Length: 369
Ligand code: NAD
Ligand code: IPM
Ligand code: MN
Image (cartoon, rainbow, N blue to C red; front, side):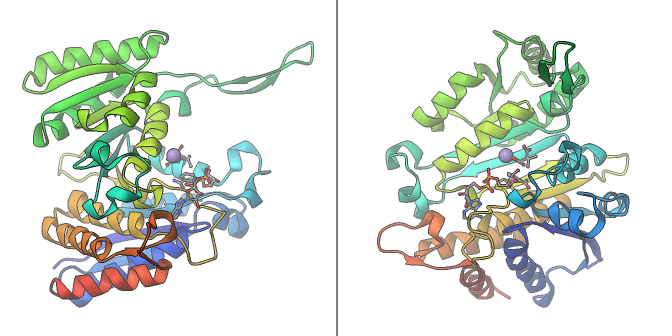
């Protein structure tokens, strides 16, 4: 098997702890003859600030551009909260998304049967749930201009951010969502606030036109973002694929994570546009952050990071079987009652990060190592 270039960016807090477990799965893939990766590892976020003064440096961005795929942990922490705004650890992930052109952030929220009781929602509401949120990730209010904090002549200050979307930005992310819907249950819900925001109105018009022209087979509906938040808690199974902007997608995917039991379970893939040769930049990361409250204690759930690796195999290397093996191993581990604290239920064994990693590796060995 040809060498594939993988860049690991563990980051801060629990990032390195959960990345260590994903790395053991990467080693397993090599050991079992399934895939060999050319691995590189680098600093991002607070760790990079400590070493270089900056949350991400140009050489790291260049390595990310050269890699076949990037596996990212998490960045941030209270020790860097007093950094100047444009030097915060979080800049690292925003900069990577922007510079690599990673405009489509895929955030699946499937419910594992064994975890149905870990969700704060009633079992009958979440059983069988399988949502895919497609979050636009290089535009919207995260990147719109003007932005900043300015002082007016009378001394009053103004904090400014601007929500901007152009038709090509909307079309390319909507296309990704329509294609996914086609391969799933054929239903797409487009989410904005077209009732109060012009960028939302343009979003709705553009998605509607694209659907009518290119995806008449996909059942398209529209929903205001506030209603969508309510509907996700009330009747989440009505959703198949959701497509939405950067900020609403951030909020709705954290909400969706609790339908499945924990933020510590949900992986994501952030994809760019394919080039002429079909190659595209891609970054994979859990949707959770650096969890400063549990960092350094060995308590973090590594499954979101491990499932992000499975997504990496699936989307960047078309290694469907190996991705499925990792997902099956995770599912079996959960079925056996192993639980980190975040997904603990009555009568299940409470374990730490490393023990959860051990359990996944044991299952992988059983599945054929
Ligand atoms: P967070 O996701 O780090 O944590 C929220 C809560 O979920 C915490 O109670 C945490 O303990 C728990 N949690 C998260 N991941 C877990 C896991 N794998 N296992 C068990 N429990 C887990 O969000 P936050 O506390 O709002 O932010 C902390 C820092 O992380 C901030 O600096 C924030 O900017 C950053 N952040 C980074 C990313 C990223 O790197 N992509 C994402 C979100 C937040
Ligand atoms: C996420 C995070 C990031 C975001 C932050 C850390 C910049 O919350 O990946 O969900 O808001 O996109
Ligand atoms: Mn988030």
